[in-house]
Image (tube, rainbow, N blue to C red; front, side):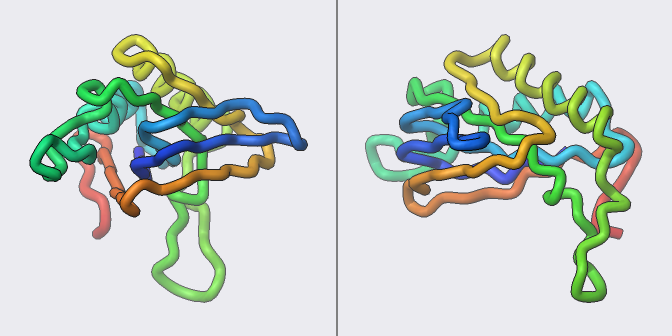
Length: 154
Protein backbone atom coordinates (compact mmCIF):
# COMPACT_ATOMS: atom_id res chain seq x y z
CA UNK A 1 0.00 0.00 0.00
CA UNK A 2 1.06 3.53 -0.66
CA UNK A 3 0.45 6.82 1.13
CA UNK A 4 1.45 10.21 -0.18
CA UNK A 5 1.24 12.28 2.98
CA UNK A 6 1.24 16.04 3.21
CA UNK A 7 1.42 18.22 6.29
CA UNK A 8 -1.47 20.63 5.86
CA UNK A 9 -2.84 23.78 7.44
CA UNK A 10 -6.23 22.66 6.13
CA UNK A 11 -7.68 20.28 3.54
CA UNK A 12 -11.08 19.52 2.06
CA UNK A 13 -12.73 16.97 -0.25
CA UNK A 14 -15.74 17.84 -2.39
CA UNK A 15 -17.96 15.52 -4.41
CA UNK A 16 -20.43 17.14 -6.83
CA UNK A 17 -20.05 20.50 -5.09
CA UNK A 18 -20.68 19.09 -1.61
CA UNK A 19 -17.96 19.03 1.04
CA UNK A 20 -17.77 15.41 2.22
CA UNK A 21 -14.71 15.78 4.47
CA UNK A 22 -12.59 18.61 5.85
CA UNK A 23 -9.83 19.08 8.41
CA UNK A 24 -7.81 21.92 9.82
CA UNK A 25 -4.13 21.35 10.71
CA UNK A 26 -2.96 17.79 10.28
CA UNK A 27 -2.14 15.28 7.56
CA UNK A 28 -3.71 14.70 4.17
CA UNK A 29 -2.99 11.11 3.12
CA UNK A 30 -3.63 10.02 -0.45
CA UNK A 31 -3.93 6.22 -0.29
CA UNK A 32 -3.22 3.74 -3.08
CA UNK A 33 -3.76 -0.01 -2.89
CA UNK A 34 -1.71 -2.40 -5.01
CA UNK A 35 -2.36 -6.01 -6.02
CA UNK A 36 -1.17 -8.32 -3.27
CA UNK A 37 -1.86 -5.86 -0.46
CA UNK A 38 -3.86 -7.14 2.48
CA UNK A 39 -4.84 -6.54 6.09
CA UNK A 40 -1.24 -6.52 7.31
CA UNK A 41 -0.28 -3.77 4.84
CA UNK A 42 -3.32 -1.67 5.78
CA UNK A 43 -2.41 -1.96 9.47
CA UNK A 44 1.27 -1.17 8.89
CA UNK A 45 0.48 1.81 6.66
CA UNK A 46 -1.97 3.24 9.22
CA UNK A 47 0.72 2.86 11.88
CA UNK A 48 3.30 4.60 9.68
CA UNK A 49 1.02 7.47 8.62
CA UNK A 50 -0.04 8.21 12.19
CA UNK A 51 3.45 7.80 13.61
CA UNK A 52 5.53 9.54 10.93
CA UNK A 53 7.28 12.51 12.48
CA UNK A 54 6.66 15.43 10.13
CA UNK A 55 5.69 18.20 12.56
CA UNK A 56 8.21 20.59 14.10
CA UNK A 57 9.23 20.40 17.74
CA UNK A 58 10.21 23.47 19.78
CA UNK A 59 13.57 23.61 17.98
CA UNK A 60 11.90 23.46 14.57
CA UNK A 61 13.03 19.88 13.82
CA UNK A 62 10.57 17.36 12.40
CA UNK A 63 10.28 15.28 15.56
CA UNK A 64 6.54 15.16 16.23
CA UNK A 65 3.91 12.80 14.82
CA UNK A 66 0.25 13.54 14.27
CA UNK A 67 -0.64 12.11 17.69
CA UNK A 68 1.76 14.57 19.34
CA UNK A 69 0.12 17.61 17.74
CA UNK A 70 -3.59 16.99 18.19
CA UNK A 71 -4.05 17.37 14.42
CA UNK A 72 -6.50 15.53 12.20
CA UNK A 73 -6.08 12.99 9.41
CA UNK A 74 -7.86 13.21 6.06
CA UNK A 75 -7.55 9.97 4.07
CA UNK A 76 -8.36 10.09 0.36
CA UNK A 77 -8.43 7.00 -1.88
CA UNK A 78 -6.24 7.47 -4.95
CA UNK A 79 -5.72 4.42 -7.14
CA UNK A 80 -3.45 6.39 -9.50
CA UNK A 81 -0.65 6.12 -6.93
CA UNK A 82 -0.32 2.46 -7.98
CA UNK A 83 0.31 3.39 -11.62
CA UNK A 84 3.30 2.00 -13.48
CA UNK A 85 4.90 5.01 -15.18
CA UNK A 86 8.20 3.43 -16.22
CA UNK A 87 7.59 3.45 -19.96
CA UNK A 88 5.46 5.16 -22.54
CA UNK A 89 3.39 8.29 -22.22
CA UNK A 90 0.35 6.70 -20.60
CA UNK A 91 0.21 5.14 -17.13
CA UNK A 92 -0.61 1.46 -16.69
CA UNK A 93 -2.79 0.47 -13.76
CA UNK A 94 -1.94 -3.23 -13.85
CA UNK A 95 -0.32 -2.92 -10.39
CA UNK A 96 -3.45 -1.41 -8.82
CA UNK A 97 -5.75 -3.62 -6.77
CA UNK A 98 -9.15 -4.50 -8.19
CA UNK A 99 -11.70 -1.82 -7.22
CA UNK A 100 -13.51 -4.04 -4.68
CA UNK A 101 -10.27 -4.97 -2.94
CA UNK A 102 -8.99 -1.40 -3.11
CA UNK A 103 -12.14 -0.12 -1.46
CA UNK A 104 -12.07 -2.82 1.21
CA UNK A 105 -8.46 -2.08 2.15
CA UNK A 106 -8.91 1.69 2.00
CA UNK A 107 -11.89 1.40 4.38
CA UNK A 108 -9.85 -0.91 6.62
CA UNK A 109 -7.03 1.68 6.70
CA UNK A 110 -9.56 4.36 7.74
CA UNK A 111 -11.10 2.08 10.39
CA UNK A 112 -7.67 1.29 11.87
CA UNK A 113 -6.70 4.96 11.84
CA UNK A 114 -9.93 5.85 13.66
CA UNK A 115 -9.21 3.22 16.30
CA UNK A 116 -5.85 4.89 16.99
CA UNK A 117 -6.57 8.54 16.29
CA UNK A 118 -9.38 11.06 16.36
CA UNK A 119 -10.40 12.93 14.30
CA UNK A 120 -10.15 11.03 11.02
CA UNK A 121 -12.06 12.13 7.92
CA UNK A 122 -12.12 10.41 4.54
CA UNK A 123 -12.91 10.96 0.92
CA UNK A 124 -15.37 8.81 -0.98
CA UNK A 125 -14.03 5.73 -2.76
CA UNK A 126 -14.84 5.64 -6.48
CA UNK A 127 -16.17 9.20 -6.57
CA UNK A 128 -14.82 12.01 -8.72
CA UNK A 129 -13.40 14.21 -5.96
CA UNK A 130 -11.95 17.68 -5.80
CA UNK A 131 -9.25 17.86 -3.13
CA UNK A 132 -8.19 21.27 -1.83
CA UNK A 133 -5.32 21.76 0.54
CA UNK A 134 -2.86 24.21 1.97
CA UNK A 135 0.41 22.29 2.24
CA UNK A 136 2.29 23.49 5.31
CA UNK A 137 5.98 23.80 4.53
CA UNK A 138 5.55 22.39 1.92
CA UNK A 139 6.06 18.99 3.51
CA UNK A 140 5.25 15.88 1.44
CA UNK A 141 6.43 12.27 1.84
CA UNK A 142 5.85 9.00 -0.02
CA UNK A 143 5.33 5.99 2.28
CA UNK A 144 5.09 2.49 0.88
CA UNK A 145 4.44 -0.83 2.59
CA UNK A 146 5.12 -3.92 0.47
CA UNK A 147 3.31 -7.21 1.03
CA UNK A 148 5.28 -9.56 3.26
CA UNK A 149 7.86 -11.42 1.22
CA UNK A 150 7.61 -9.02 -1.73
CA UNK A 151 10.01 -6.37 -2.89
CA UNK A 152 8.83 -3.34 -4.82
CA UNK A 153 10.64 -1.41 -7.48
CA UNK A 154 12.32 -4.38 -9.16
